[in-house]
Amino acid sequence: MKPDKVNVACPHCGQSQLEPRGGYSTVCRHCGQNFRIHKGDRPAAPLLVNALATRRVVCFECGTLLDVSVEAESTMCKRCSTHVDLRDYQIDQAVSKNFRTHGAFVIGEKGYVFNTEANVGDAVIKGRLLGKLTAHRSLTIYSTAEIRGTFRAALLIIPVGNCVAWKLPLDVGEVEIAGELAANVHIDGTVRIKSTGRLFGDVQVRNLIVEPGAVLVGNVRLAPSVAPTPEPLLSPAP
Image 1 (cartoon, rainbow, N blue to C red):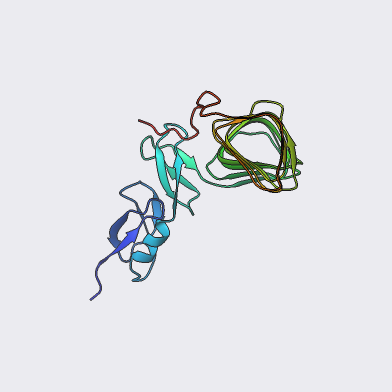
Image 2: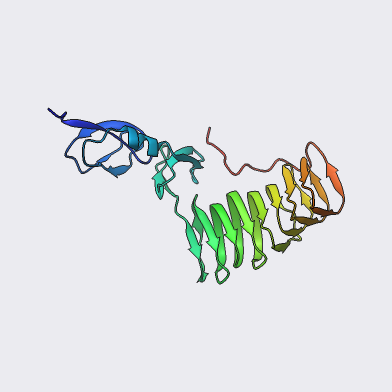
């Protein structure tokens, strides 16, 4: 005789719970998210394996750290119940709005985002941006990008074959240069110049890695701390 209930796993947080075998959907008793119950008598283990593929994000409102499924497009904060967007956005036209997501934020070569405050996970800029941008993980800038405003990121990436010039102080944690960057880099993190990379500007950093074949033109100073400690991009609530 088959059991009346089966063990299922929430795709949002991975918590397992018993549910009626013939049920269609339910609510997770741990995170409060609704999800569909898979049909059949499959054991919970395969579901748990998928659920364990998670990423860590922070609630935009209260700063609580959240572990969510890599396949989820949204979640709800377990502390303040705020909706947290996890979707990716591809912009290939003119858009005037704010963005707040832990997904990817990509402005194509024909894209133009203006009068915006974008708070995103990863950002890729090939088009035009007018406003304020914060990338919690990485910011990749191409030669075709036109940025008017400010940006900050955990990691700034200049891809191979691309040239970027920036006159303002860089508000980033680390820099990886495979193309060309003309800027003064004064940060507390690490600057890595790849073998194809070129950096023109004064450098004051904690760590500097220059691969064979790379070009560095400017004054270099290595120091334990070269700038005031910035506000962390991920700030868990107490």
